[in-house]
Image 1 (tube, rainbow, N blue to C red):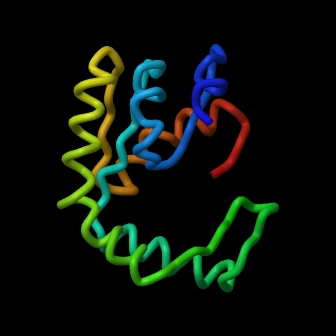
Image 2 (image 1 turned 180 degrees about the vertical axis):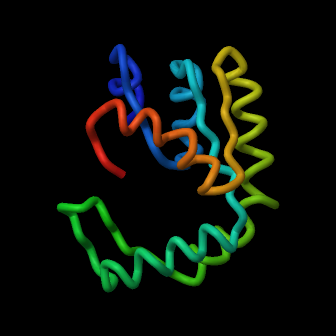
Length: 122
């Protein structure tokens, strides 16, 4: 999945797909790690659920697969997955510039000048 995308000159891949993370990290020059608190992530999930009223919205790229297992995964991410992701970044992406945001405010502050300059909106 990621190898063809990472072969291009410029690319952005979003998501926490641990199975392809080493491929993506090896090819990346920048890694943005959203290390957000569980409550922030769960609130975002609830807001998306309300905004899109559940279901699959392929046009917008929203796929509502919220299960209790998923909620438990999000709630425990910092304890279980974050150490694994950090280890993979250290092993496969040590050459890349790693930027970590611990709040949506930090991420938005970083993105705002880039978005304004590109003519796109958030």
